[in-house]
Image (cartoon, rainbow, N blue to C red; front, top):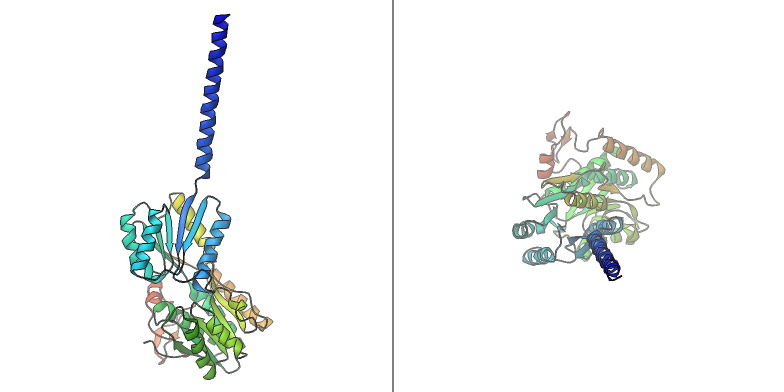
Length: 365
């Protein structure tokens, strides 16, 4: 009996031990499954700025909703320069494995931090420098600009379009040129007046610039600014507007014709998956309308059915590659041929463009 009891007790102990091992193994598996990849975003302005940073944060929200194994946080209103380096370092030290720095001025701070954290992947928006663990990304917003130009060119009665512009850099110049080409494709008599603000985010200054353009005869206001100020100016004057970054119709419901918008969500989700799958490589990404990174917002109530059809037809051609925005012949303001017939601007030429196309009134300072 003693022997049988001993054997039974041993079996119970062994079973308990095995059960304990099984339980521990299950806990380990559950813990591993529950682990999330920490991802962080750095914004130059408020995530609710109604423009640039809001567009990026909508992308972050897309990641949070569609990628349950990702924990996506953000830091907002981070000034460019030394303070940005401090914030990026802080995020890297907190265990974030992927960090998106979303303003041009974060480029060098991002590279500096990346050297200290080789196991973290950094992705910088709109810059041009890379490193083994640093890539950059942007989109072909000029494609959407061309389409919004078609809308503006069909809408104007004065044949004067106003363009509130941030800084005279290739990105902005490229957008102005594309907008002008789109407008002139449906209205050869149109002119685009450009007014520089030398700001990215200053609602009062940008709104005042739009009012100045309206006083100069413009009846449609486009913008390369990060606030809805120019659209609000158009609304107040009973004119029309073309927004930027996000659908700005909420800020100017009567004035809004459409907006050139960013759709960062799909790109962010794809980039994160590449990193977590071990397939990411440092380099530059320039997403297109075909990739759905850039698009236009829904048309406003003032846009005619004819204009919608023209714009949608051009959009389809851009997506299938049969319409190239910067295909020659293209002339500059002085009438000089810059891109001859049969040629298309290369990416390198677009990234360095420092001249306005025919039809633009303004200077590149």
